[in-house]
Image (cartoon, rainbow, N blue to C red):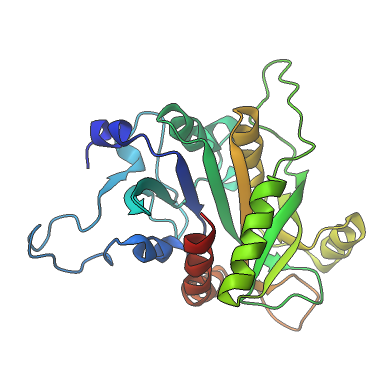
Length: 268
């Protein structure tokens, strides 16, 4: 897919897929990577896709589980843009660089965006492999994409209450347990210490991760409607006797992705 074709499609809704969640795109009618297509021919692209690296100002993530491409799909007869992967602050980028994709999507017409991520569960009543609807966030990353001027944007409702209600209604309709809570965004790339998790719990966080917050801030500053969903891939440090590994995050994402796909298709 050319950049011009993507711009001409003018999708109004986009979904950013976090660690291990790139396969969710298949639920929207795309094909698995590498599968043959008699119309396209073996070895040719199987998605209507464009790599981030083909778009000026964007680049692919260096993190496993982030394909680094846009996929244009159809949902209920309308175009929907799927962003498979994201950049992170811990890759050595600024908050402005991390959110370049959000600004690009806004430029081509996106006005509603769902930000998904992999996160560690802090709330004891949650369960690993489950989903948490983000109702608010705590920015502990020490930066913002709005640096550089008096960009005093209101953040009293970053995550749309209306859209939250739609996601809750959709989860009931499809019989899916959907937690709701506050996401704490930390810099990373190291995982948190048990002491840090105790601090986050005291601050009111229900889940913790290393992304999403800069994107949510940038999207709201642009006037976009935002929803956020965390896939709870593991217990946060100190809550269980375990060692945290990114490979585990990606693996749980592959399994839980089917539940996220059902929810997204029902609510978007």
